[in-house]
Image (tube, rainbow, N blue to C red; front, top):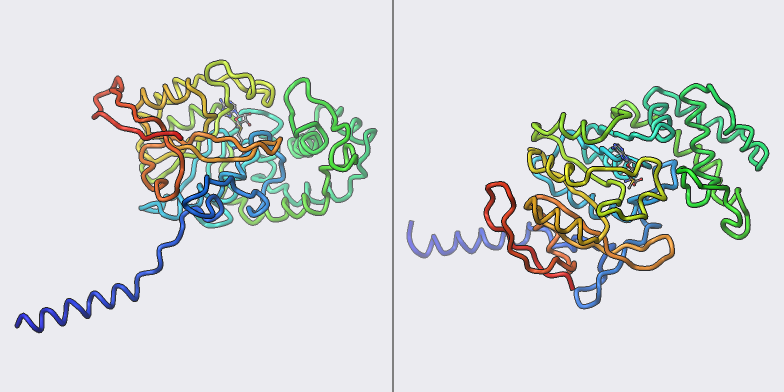
Length: 345
Ligand SMILES: C[S@@+](CC[C@H](N)C(=O)[O-])C[C@H]1O[C@@H](n2cnc3c(N)ncnc32)[C@H](O)[C@@H]1O
């Protein structure tokens, strides 16, 4: 081929690719308005709320980042494992948005477990109707939640009632009824029967793609550790280094965090962990050779905070102006090359 022909062909190819390649989009449009300002937390109102729970420590604010992770994941994972599922917004997002085929949801708390088990067992419709028919006041709630020797679906209803009428949705010991709630509406302030009922109706659509297990999440992680077609989303109680927050929020807060990190050194599939921005956690992540990034969020008091995201390879998160970890060179105990993380500002 002559030089001239070659030149023309190269130009045609170049034009073709320039026209057909999509415009580069901001990875985190919800998080960041522009590259010069500080990162903004996600407006949770923009995320479809699919969980019937109002969950303490819920990860609705993390949904846009989670979506980006899975949408750009290659190869597309078959199964998402969520070993500390709580209110389940991440698993439900993955199902409703077809980011995976199936999810394995794991929760050790028997009250929460009753809700997910009932959905999987085909009782979502029953719960939807029960919610619509319930005449809620303090007396009826006390009567309902005092019942003992109940079936799983009745326990699920008790859980939803407590979650919706107790302060902060907290089911752990010491929690009590909402006193003032929204606009002084007391225990009614988080009881939206039509909305809640609809959420259960919708759960019917994905129930057959959920495997639910009430057990220790660590066991389930180990069970799937050899599979490279699964991904894990890990949101444990924030109790590393004896932190108090997680203890107040959950009945089951005691977790061997060091063991969790050690298990993930052996896991074949990809994973994302969210954690509080605590020194103990960063030390463990460095020790085990994982990468970290910080993501802004708003806590229940509307203060902007940063939470840690931990994973094997978080380079995909660098397309937004997130703040990073300080440069640190370290040698984990295992045979691993030196890893450099970047600066938190
Ligand atoms: C931070 S919350 C998860 C919140 C969830 N990501 C959401 O968006 O609703 C942690 C959950 O882990 C559960 N948990 C604690 N220890 C566990 C264990 N060993 N195995 C399984 N679940 C556990 C707690 O009961 C709690 O529901």
